[in-house]
Image (cartoon, rainbow, N blue to C red; front, side, top):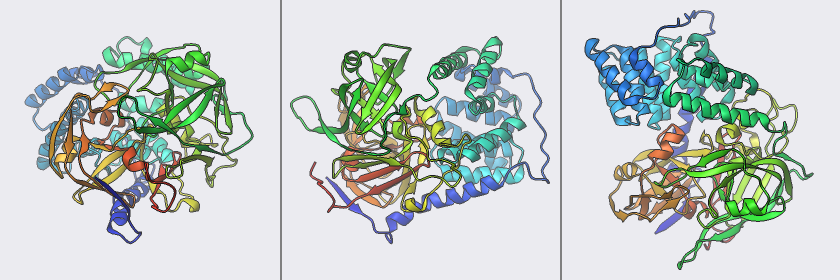
Length: 560
């Protein structure tokens, strides 16, 4: 049973949702105004130092060894805040989130004003999805020491999650100025450089045999290959080649296979080099992903090898990049676009998937009751000297978010809420993930991903058990790009409240979402799936991290 209602502007639901975000927006304003460039603050730049065995193991992604070394160091020097912070970050990297939280909490009980411990605690809170708490703890640390480099790295993460890209860039600059030797900071700072400089810096890093080793070296090498690939793309990769600046496209039903046929998803008719495919519209995916059969019919030549990930426990699937001369979507045509192609002949019985982040240079509207999809120009920001040219952002989630950060400007911009978007809700954005706080049974707030590609809303076992009972289940009930989910249970009744929308859910799918949380960098407790979202009209502004959910039972056809 699922009952959907719209909360009024005066209702407790809408005000409770805003109460989750408004303190954070106020905290962001404080973060922006607080920086070490004040005349009364003089910060000392960290000096290079030889890495300890624990630091070297951490850098090389030998996490079990790093944990042991940090614990050994703490036996010799109990309550050393720097060693504790290193242990906490190691536990976070190992995904031992509860252990990390307990470790830093125990140390803070004895030293509540220790800045290294406060920063480590804020990092734990951020990973737990407690973003407001993380911002508050970071502010407490700032008042004690405005010169802590790791503090600014955390600030940058919070800013980016909130589409505050200019503020993120400043925070990264402060962090790197304060401690250019911290490799976590250096890695993020490299991402702010022009593409050619990033490639040069990565090559310099790899040229030194002792700078990065093991798994970290593999990650840097993979990142360098991606950068070199992007450097080969035309200056106007996947640019709009048609006159219209907006389009209206029918949403096409995509039926499931098997004996029990039903509408599993809604898609768009897309032409690749005049070969038509129907791609599922998926806010939980990134880029353009098509199956091998479509790519072969369209004459797309295989390029660099790669992998694609998704829900499921069978691991990544083989894929390759290809270049499409032309892509047509409605009245819009795009030239010279990158496409991901799976090795499979089909993708869960479909031609492919289009992640809505590829349209991030447009205002996107998914009007499910009317079975329509709209792309219209985004409102210009006050700092824009020109209207942003349309295009498809097919280079992946991080590149899509980087492009959204600047728009027509060459410099990153902070979130702008146009007067025409005063009814939109600020959401968190991590790569292509759109993440919203959801109040469960009026008891707890958890973060959920907006996922039109998921047939049903789902929740993690931990989040479900915190508000209701979980029972039954088995394997094979949920399937994604990475195969079947090994263990699926069901939760009893849970009331969802978010952004003025309320829905009562019984028998929700319940399964482990830790993989999504690792990718997002914050705890994601589930998905808002198609069984909920198809009742709504959803408007998305990826550039500014804004979403509007509208439910009107008199609008369109709600019979699915």
